[in-house]
Length: 99
Image (cartoon, rainbow, N blue to C red; front, side, top):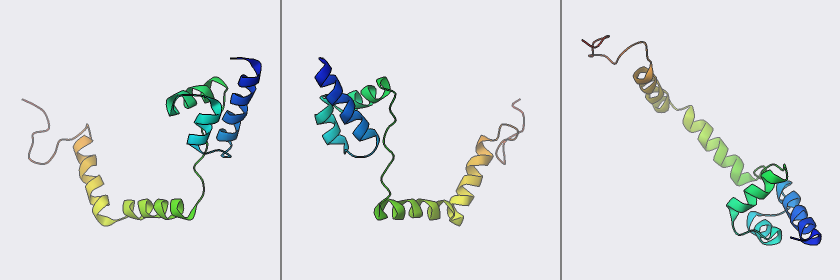
């Protein structure tokens, strides 16, 4: 790459990292093949991935996930899973120590 194309790529990467460009446009402007190459270019230039936009749709999606976690059924499921993975005890009906 020459200096001019390097500068154009760096500008596209910075614009993407700050949220000014969407992914597809950043791939085109940075002159990379796909999203994986875009991420590699960001890392090589010590740039972060952009943060998700704060939109009403994203806010409602987050609220649904939070309310689902607080539901009683998920709490009881989480408790059952915790009992199964607790290394100190075994599930009810099984001996504490094998043989």
